[in-house]
Length: 378
Ligand SMILES: [Zn+2]
Image 1 (cartoon, helix red, strand yellow):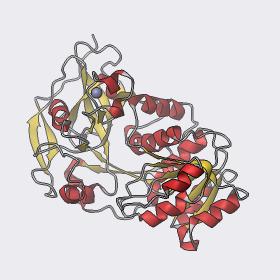
Image 2: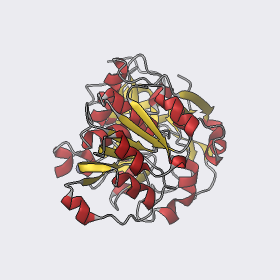
Image 3: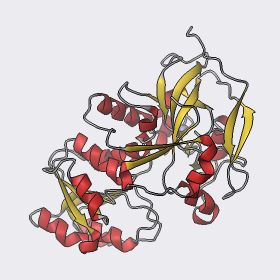
Image 4: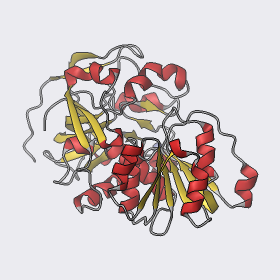
């Protein structure tokens, strides 16, 4: 039996009573684990730049995606230390440092049993939103996101952190895993020319890093900001080739970069402000048998030429989030230094400043910045 750290009876949690209302810090009972859960003392919780905007507009933008019952504690990308383990947990112990993959599923359905948790009908992102009407059942079991001092998480949703990764750095595993899973679905690897659209953003930048770590020899990085693109290119000047959308459409450039062929794989990481035309421009850059994996959040309808896709044997693949197994692969890549999180600039804020952080993050340095809230310093 590991010595349990003293866990207080109550804890501070940021709670939202109405969609878009400021969060309120309140004392609530500290959660207790059921048999297969752990309690994680949260050292850092990631805050993506768009989170405040998303929460304010949720019910109008995404009426079909259920939020947890209010008041709710949000917070998508938590990392911290295990302080208590349930009676049936064998693979984790008190003191382990973990990232909590917020992707929750039932664990017993056909999809879950086949190792496909994202195919589960009960799938939710703990501390964020669900995908179907069954989501609330899962939120009832796991009511806390990372914007609190102690959260409950299933042991099989935790990724142990290597010693060379801080909890603040680990909050970036969510978007990194999202990009990594998209690359895997698209068959990334050596000699698979890979275009990343939105390459300097919060999602795009780690997607480029993962492509490099997976052995991709030619990454075509597309974004708007030329200074950020150049900074990105410097990471691997022999492998990263850049194009600013201020200099015109992607297609002609991408075709030139591939001796007239087109790219094997494109990963679209553009956020909700992106247009359908931008995505079509990227699709027109694909070679015969090329794949587009859409992992961004473009909300506009895109009129896709399905006849050409058939003639050219092309695929369009949607991808959301990533599995805990993929998170473990990333942790191992970081330990072995094939993936480097030191290039992210860390900006941490105490839990008391959550509303300020949600109101808007100034002075972002594109995807190089990593913002988090620190409920308990590590
Ligand atoms: Zn399931």
